[in-house]
Image (cartoon, rainbow over all chains, first blue to last red; front, side, top):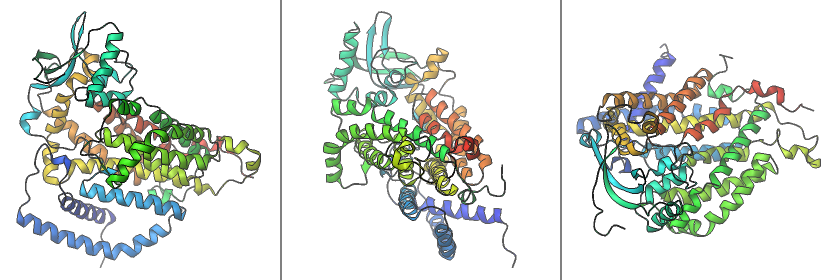
Length: 216
Length: 298
């Protein structure tokens, strides 16, 4: 029998691998699904996928000697091969299971599906730090403060410090104290944490509501 | 370009350049120095941030807490010195190992408290590669030390596998990112309609540099089709990183695509990853470009 063309073999291997990953990625719950649940798989689809996974397993077992020969022939020093290979293998398991345990990662940032009504809403709201400047009220963006080209205030943050304050400035009192200290030193009044709304059409603040009870 | 020996497995057997590997060592060393000297890590300590509930460690809980409480911040100081020595190529093997240990420990502290989605994490594999590589045979102070003078160079392939290992690691990260968006496929179909990218853009609208550049958002974020296009492009670019293992012809388009992807995400509010991509630029250059600067063989 004539062997299959290389491209076709590659396509089949890719499809079988994707099928296996589709199965493994639902074994464990993942934070990726916290915003929107993945639609359930039908029972018929599950049986078809399991049958294809069995085919993949048989093909993999048959290919193992060739894979082992290839790995042994790699011109990489054995200690490096073992350590780096183990690191990537454990990482691959994390990708397959959609899990993250430092230092192994499934690189799952921005992978969550979100509800349609959240995506298309013309108004978003969140707790933000507002600063009263002589020119008016400004919503503090720590992500912009982490960039020397766009920073308004002199925090001395890099983009990572900006990210930390983006995460924690409204939830950790010591973070707010740091912000207050810097702004007051620049002759500005202490900032306030306020529930604000902004337009996703223009990116501008559209209202400011009083802070919820108990907020600093 | 040699079309015959062009796949990743074939490229491993080609000669490499000690200078190319040294350039990579210098860039990674300086980048790690910048990471460890970032104000972000002491800032976490200053505000008393506790581990983020979803940020898991491969270490058992008790050990993870011990590492964070007693080792992370002191080893950050050691790592600063070691990464500088790594960049200078002084006591290169030792400084590579010490930098790697310090980086792993410091990043453990950072990762658990910085809501865990982070580009710094992906330097770990590169540092592991440098621990085993002959990366101090060129552009290194080690070569000036009296006891190292006349030390012969290794076989040319010894300078190639670390570069190709980093190409593999780079492709692995981006293909994984593409798969994370698609898997399971029933979720991937929802993600590809663009609503996720749209929701993130809306969430970060106040933080978007593009709003400052244009004076307003360049288009109404409630319109979905630009995000549908961007989502498909993202997955194509990320999965396309797998082509890096197939042929060197993919290097330029994949690298430009990835850089464009990160710049686009940054313009809509989320910084990061641009630096990670730029740090890897030397691995995509042909070793023959460095040959003129390579030390002469005895």
